[in-house]
Amino acid sequence: MFHLFREELDAAFQEDRKLRWKLLAGVVVGLVLGIKLTAKFWFAPEEDQHGATPLVSACATGALAVLCVVLVLALSLKDIVKRRVCQQQPVSFLLRCYLAYGFLSLALWVVTAIGGTILATVCWASWFG
Image (cartoon, rainbow, N blue to C red; front, side):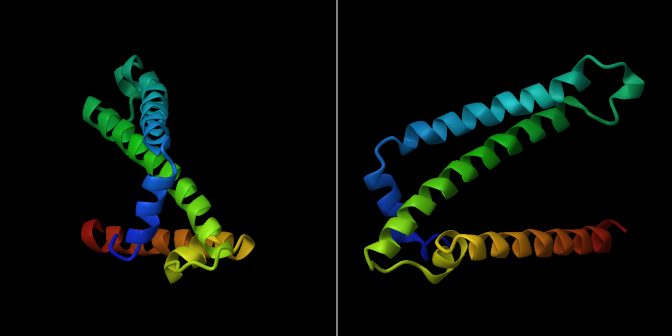
């Protein structure tokens, strides 16, 4: 999958020397958010925990950290893609659609999110329903 975006990812890590620090900051922000959001369940009475075990809290915290890293990488890729499109350099069609067309890119993200949610719901219902 990442072979399609190889040039753009290479450009992101070569041109933006501080990207590693930004990714590390994304991890830290995700961990802090995850701990802050799940900490209220740690000290709650048993009947108010709603199934929030330490494993669930750890998974939620890890998922938020990964989500923050993906967001940092997507924002960095957006800058690279816009720069490459302006300079008439080759850019993957998929990255161009999702990151370089402003409002149309936002609409595509919304359609993807809605479609992904529907697909996940259908899969969940077929597996566990």
